[in-house]
Amino acid sequence: MRAFADLLDALIYTRSRNAKLKLIGDYLRATPDPDRGWGLAALTGDLDLPGVKPAVIRALIEARVDPVLYRMSRDYVGDSAETIALLWPNPPVPPPAAEPLTISQAVGTLNALSRSDAPAALAAMLDRLDAEERFALLKMATGALRIGVSARLAKTALATAFEIDVEAVEEVWHGIDAPYASLFAWAEGTGAQPTTADVPVFRPFMLAHPLEDLRVDLADYAAEWKWDGIRVQIVHVAGETRLFSRTGDDVTGSFPEVARAFTTPGVIDGELLVKGEHQGGTLEDGGGAASFNALQQRLGRKTVSAKMLSDYPAFVRVYDILFDGAEDLRPLPWRERRVRLEAFMPRLDPARFDLSAVIEAEDFTALEGIRAGARDAAIEGVMLKRRDSPYVTGRRVGLWYKWKRDPLTADCVMMYAQRGSGRRSSFYSDYTFGCWTEDGELLPVGKAYSGITDEELKVLDKFVRTHTLNRFGPVREVERALVLEIAFDSIHESKRHKSGVAMRFPRIARIRTDKPAAEADTVAALKRLIV
Image (cartoon, rainbow, N blue to C red; front, side, top):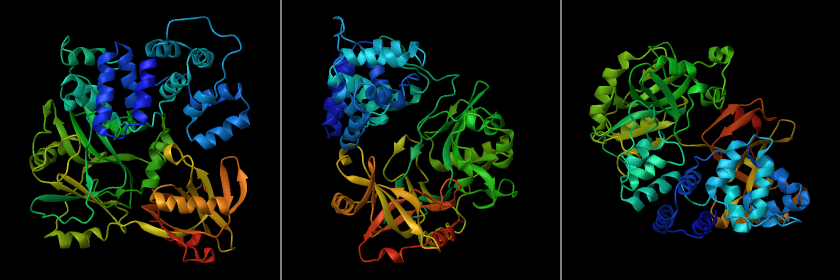
């Protein structure tokens, strides 16, 4: 645990990507199995300890220190693990001397215990550790590291440290369980390279850069619609089908009808949607896709009722093909993969799968005009894919671009503010804002914390501190005096919110010090934007 605690401490204060790669690589080379495997699982977000959840840890600390003190300290520090690590009291009776706690011992113990027994075991471990080690253990247990290390960077560090191909690591990653004994054996040359044969594993998606101000030649790029659903990868290998989200989460159980319909060996990439009349036509001209709000009714459900399947039937609009049977098509250019995909589609159930059409446009100017109609059709925007691009992991400059429709905007009044986390923990950086009803009541319509510069953050933080009306724990209610222009991708009806609306991806576009709060937008105006 000591070595992992030192690694986290170093990573927190290191900004250089190369320096982080070296720190993680040195740790993986110097740490024995299985500790390094569990450490890598923690860094990549693949460590799950079912018996230890944030509420359990909060109950442990509030049983040992004044709950008000803890909450006030958490509000100021901005990180639960750090707050608890510092506040955790020394036990009245020091525990007997023991060997230093290792990661594998901690994980093994907590995984072997029931939900009722795990809290006491965790508390006993925290009693044995110093503040830095407690911080590391709590970060591992909750899976919320937030230390500026992505899963991709951790895997890159592994590949760099042992001089193996990071794409090969990504390829087998989801087919190997922590602590990755076979992966480290291959990396050190003592074992064979792991294979994904006969296992339905996730392959990382190819992603796009924002187009921004760039104009491209449509002779080099193909244009497709960017549908407003969630990106999924569907794999059928050895008689088994799996659906994976963009982050590699297995969502098969949430969409069983789609999994049952995909029985052709191969791997495809597409957009998961719910049938409806908003987004285009197709599905054999029987109708298109509903808005994202309809899809949300299905997301995150581990079990799906017959009524849910009937009311919100899912399907996939297919973008690309990665494998045709056992044949890997990813090295082929997009134009050749598209031909293979068109030949693959007739083998799929037309009630659950259709093909995302290529947009026909004479030139980029004509495409601009076509894209302008995307909002009326509830489509998220346009994708531009270089015709000679292979299917590669992550974002590669010049290959794929996303050209999202222009955001909607509304002038809203700040109502509440809360401290942020991490480097923003000293600032009120999370803002709840509202719009007016016909009766003059201000109702919350959204919450945002992004879109502002550091200087603007200081301005808003000062406003919150000098215009506070009430305090509710970490939340401050402020005078209804400051207008924020909020940009958002779309807006939907919502039964969960008193205003009856919910924004998708709200962010702060600018601070409207020039506009009186009374002239902010109304809830009725927002409802007129619902498609």
